[in-house]
Length: 165
Image (cartoon, rainbow, N blue to C red):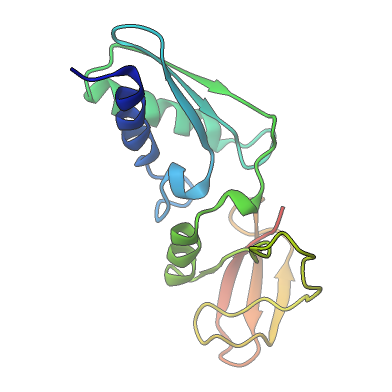
């Protein structure tokens, strides 16, 4: 018999595997926007999502993609609720998500120190193509509001940088 806790974990894996509509290289779990999955009875599930920023236009696509994935998994009644507190931050992106961003050519946000200590003061952003920190800002906004457009001075390649929040 499947317990509710095991079912919630299974459904979280299904919902968490949904790709982000703006950054399809990442899943919603890796991006850190999937907050919780609750089972409220046979065939009735609620999912909690926190957008990367208030007013994020991708939240509707995320919600419908999660609903579709869970319907395909046999859950007839799915509701997705937007949760704004605690706010999402770039610290919520998993290590795997950061790795995938860099592999995809997007400079990931700088992580918080693991020991919870002070954040090192540096303005450098590492180029995902050649690894140089000699980069320049071209535009504070890129294809989405959460990314900036930068260029590497060393290899001259442009790239997106996922801004720290």
